[in-house]
Every structure is written in structure tokens, then in C-alpha cells.
Image (cartoon, rainbow, N blue to C red; front, side):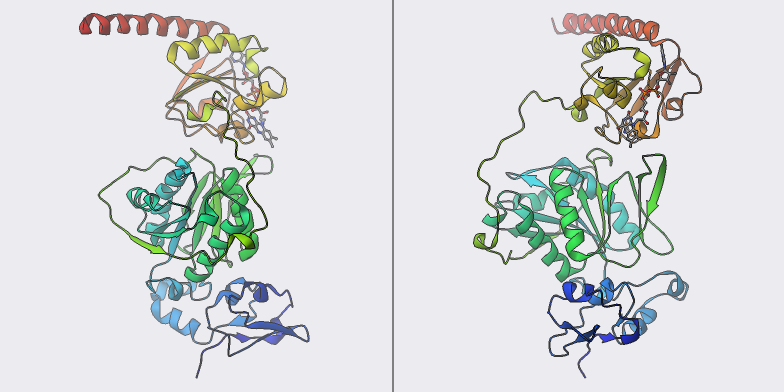
Length: 431
Ligand SMILES: Cc1cc2nc3c(=O)[nH]c(=O)nc-3n(C[C@H](O)[C@H](O)[C@H](O)COP(=O)(O)OP(=O)(O)OC[C@H]3O[C@@H](n4cnc5c(N)ncnc54)[C@H](O)[C@@H]3O)c2cc1C
């Protein structure tokens, strides 16, 4: 007998989420209760996953899951429908990473996400997949594999040439409905934020934006998504227990860049978009690149950042001197931006930029959590603060307790002398 989904009428709350999610249009409402058309139902299990009332059941799924799982895991692991059946290989759960690109140039955050995605897929006992969407983007499949993907889903179509929500949403949701990823990660960029929200809404799943930490709960195998909450006053760990995929976005530079290994091999699964240009409601009329010269502190290796301890806007001249000597840039806390001492593009933190330089000088910055989330993954943090109990010292590699008006010029003079000496030495060696 054909296996179809069963509906527990008394549990149905008529939310119609299953109707929207069913890829076969096999569900309908009758008298306020969902009903299934057995001719159309393919027992894919999507409705079981999205049903918030647990009113949909796949006969045999529980038994199959129970048999497949070790005894200890049977109680602990919630099985959101038969996700394992639905992966192409029929076994491994998949962690997906959206590979963001513009004109074929990938955004580095995609590779950073493949780095953390690799760890998640290993902890999940699954595999890592990249999703490459665009026109003439086949070369990115090799790149994604080099950065850790085991397989790549590719849709290469002229309709995807420039990012627009509709065709990218269509591509991503159709892939997800067909291959059932367990986890989907996107960069918290302009494009990633737009796509993530649209995908989560369409698939009726949860999305945790701007995560600063991602791990797998070893017992329940759920994605633990950590991010600042309540104005950054606490770090919340969020779970998406029932809906799939579990979706998270992460800002650039929050996760470390993985090593690139060009010798890696992987599988590429190419799919068709299934949407024509006429079906897209928007057109790209003009395209403007960001002006060269725009301040991009997020790309700097050395940042000399100042806080309210500077006492006024003129304090930044002192920081600029140190930054110039070291070949770095100036940054700031929101306290300074709010006071009008410096403009927003320089702001580091939760509502500013996330940076990951080799060296971060925090001068007269207290170390509020909203600031820390934007810079605490810097390789070396040098904190200068007159208050020995300032929270910034908890994340600092080197802490200097003192008046920045004395410490910063002294450091600048010392570096100037040392670097000048080294330059002279190098010139005499090469001469
Ligand atoms: C929703 C929300 C989002 C936020 N987003 C951000 C964000 O993105 N980035 C951000 O930075 N903040 C953000 N904040 C603000 C944050 O909570 C802090 O208020 C802010 O970071 C404080 O800035 P500050 O460290 O410069 O100033 P303060 O907290 O006033 O600290 C000044 C420090 O300077 C030291 N100091 C004073 N004089 C000297 C001296 N002469 N020499 C040496 N040290 C001295 C003091 O001991 C003190 O530790 C956010 C807040 C909220 C509610």
C-alpha cells in the first residue's frame, strides 16, 4: 500500500502551514482540518516537519528511526520527520552554506562559514554542502570544495546574474525542499540578510541572525545558535527544535577563515532554476559599486580604537598618529559616535562593524558587551585604561593601566623609533 502522511484530526489547529509547505499540493482544508490527497502525497515529510501541533505523522517513520538509532540516542534525539531519508545519499544530514558572490567574486564570509560548517557537520555526523547560485559561477564550486565542502549544489542561470530576492529565494527554497538540509548558514551581509529572512519565512522555519557562536548539542544534535540579546546584555543560545532547516546568519569576520586546500575533491550536483526572467517581478536597472576610498575598518590588520576615555574628538588625532606609524586605521566605540566625535563607519561593535584584526588597541574603552562582540576575536588585544577593573581587561592579551594621554604618545614614540631603526637596517642590508 502507498505510504502517505496521516493527519491526527483532533490535533490539527488549522494553521495551514502544511498547505504552504507541501511541494506536491497534496494538502487541503476541509471543515477546518487538514486533509491529504493520497494520489499526490509522496510521503516526503515536509508537512510533518512544519506542523507546530504535531498533527501530521508518517506511518513507519518512528519505527524506522528507532531501529536506526543506538539505544542511548533514542530518547535524547528528537527526529524532525525522516530528514535522513531525504538527503541525496539517503544517510548523512547536511549542513549547507550559501556561497555569496557578486559578478563571480565570492564574499569571504562564505568561506568563513564553510570553516565553522565543517566542524558542525563533523559533530553532527553529516556532511558539508555549499550552495552556489549565479551566472557563470561554476568556478566557485572548486573554491567551495577547496574550503571544505564535501558537495556543492549549483544553479547556474542568467536569471541569477544579479542578486534579486525572488529568483534567489526560489532557487534556495526549491533546493531545500528537494534535499532537506539540516542546517543552513548565510553571511549576515546585505544580500545574506535579505535572502535569509525570505527563505526562513517561506520554509516556515526559525532564523537566528548575527550569531557569534555555533555549536552542536552533543545529546540532541541540535544547532546551538549564540548571539547577543536584550540589547547585548546577555548572550542567548537559541535552538530551533522542530522546524528544518535550522537557519543562522553570521557577520563577516566573526568566524576564522579556514585553510584552503586545492587538492580536495567533492561532488557537484547541478540543478535547474525552474524560473524564467518573465516570472521575476523586478529588474536591475543600474548597478553602482561602493565608492573606492570608503572606510573599511573591517579589512584592517591593525586598529587603534578609542572610547569615551579620549575626552573629546581631538583625542582621535593622537590615535591616528599611532595608527599611521603602524600602518593601521582608527576605530571607535559607540560612545564616541553618539557623542559626535567620529562618524558611524568607524564604530566597532554590535551595531557597528565586526572586526578581526591582527592587533586591536582599545584606548579608553570600558569593554561593554556590545563593543566586545565586535572585536573580541582579534588576534591580539592591547587595552589601555585608567580603571584596573574595566571589563576590557578580561579579553585583553596585554593590559596597560594608565592615562591614555601619556601611554599612547609613549607607545607611538617607541614604535616610531623601533620601526625607523628596522627600516634603516633593512635598507643597509639591501644596499
Ligand atoms: C542595543 C545597543 C547596542 C550597542 N552597540 C554598541 C556598539 O556597536 N559598539 C559600542 O562600542 N557600544 C555599543 N553600545 C553601547 C555600549 O553599551 C557602551 O555604552 C559603549 O560601548 C561605551 O563606550 P566607551 O567604552 O567608549 O565609554 P565608557 O563606557 O564611558 O568607558 C570609557 C572608559 O574610558 C576609561 N578612561 C577614562 N579616562 C581615561 C584616560 N584618561 N585614560 C585611560 N582610560 C580612561 C574609563 O575608565 C572607562 O573604562 C550599544 C548599546 C546598546 C544598548
